[in-house]
Length: 118
Image (tube, rainbow, N blue to C red):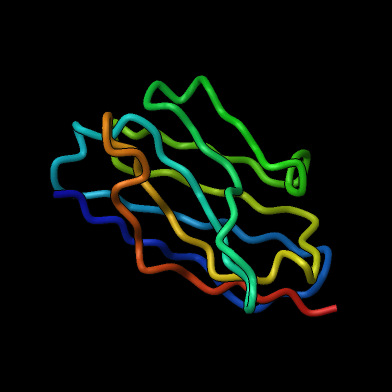
């Protein structure tokens, strides 16, 4: 089992920055990739960014490319999402997820609320 706990959400104004953290515990050696997803009210959960276990491969949704940066060290059980130039449309609950080989995005955190006011 793997447990994921997000932190760092909050209420900010458009143009501000926030850094989200995801702390993993348990059988973290099984984690292949970690990712951030988000879900806005009335919308489906969407992919934001992911990072490989080695930390050298990342990918981003087009909507956040150039503004958000995923970083961290899965081997050290922590992943971050630096969010700059935040927009009201970034308002959502942000979830950390972990990929386990053969099971896809198998583990999820409880989410942290990010609210961006205009």
